[in-house]
Image (cartoon, rainbow, N blue to C red; front, side):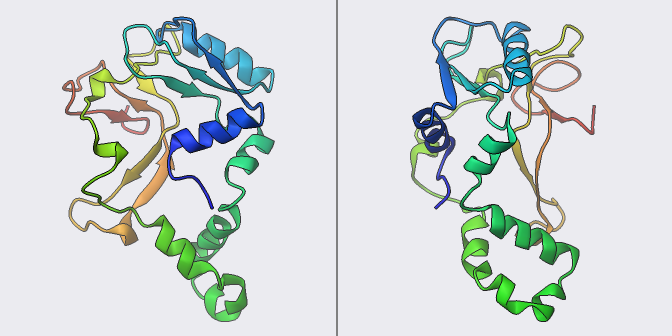
Length: 189
């Protein structure tokens, strides 16, 4: 089945005792990073900070903090993703072993990003500067989102076939970035 949004994923983790809500006010500058590192090292649960200082948004962390939790999160889609990677490495694999990819059309249909006109994601507008500005280390150059799912396409040749989905550390503020217009990915910094 997979999840339709992050809230569904967090609810599933919470129902298994794999997520702890932290309702006390926490500072995104160094404090949250220190908490997350300690919990990660202890192989602890995912965290949901519901009262982030100076921010109207909650902040989740350590979601993929253990291998068993990551396997649970991707339990419905892991095999399909594994097969997609195999096909990208060797497209002829489809001709060699077509039975291994019988469920691929459904997986491909569900993985394609869609533009929508309505839905919860469009209920409100926000800005990059409204997001929690996580500063994990004293020498960080600004606020970050650490390991979000980042979808990119070529400007010259847009489309799913030339896209990339990855997890990158994204700098939201600081440096030479224009607020609410630019962000920096880890490989640019």
